[in-house]
Image 1 (cartoon, rainbow over the protein chains, first blue to last red):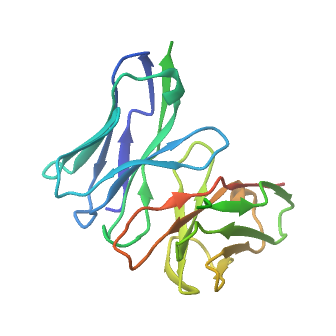
Image 2: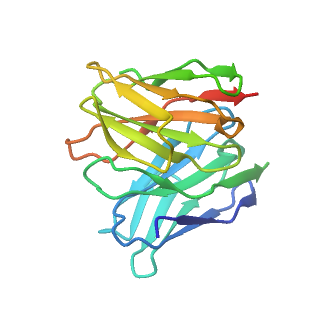
Length: 114
Length: 114
């Protein structure tokens, strides 16, 4: 029940296309859902996060869509660029106004072809 | 504002040895969480330190221990190293008790156990 399942494992997108990564969770106590971007040899960088009281959040080319009833959330990267090539992790935690332990998905390796 | 820093960058140890990893939290943050990231996997929560005390622990044995200092920096100690302890060790800095859930990661320490 603590798991966060992420798909696909890998994704290849043409430059300018839309990259979509999906995550699903079971624990309805989760109330904070961040996405992290990680480049090889680096630590994960916080990209965007959402709380379950909203269904969508957009920051620049990155959008999180959240479906509370389905217990699913997704990351959309619009106008994907080669510089977006990285591994993306979804995560979930309990305590949206406090820092709880993050449960991470398995990651999606994104390759954007020029 | 300085970001999260970790030292050392890389470390090679022999099975059975002990290791200490260090983390300096981001300016203004009072909480440090430690995660283990095996190759090709998402980070796994080890434990969190707040007000110099352990504040939550993941599924890791007692040979994983930590400390937090008055300046909020932290150490992760691992005794009796095993080959499976080879991983990227990440610390994440955050502000507990201030209505914020964001956790910001350092670059990590790559530990290799031979």
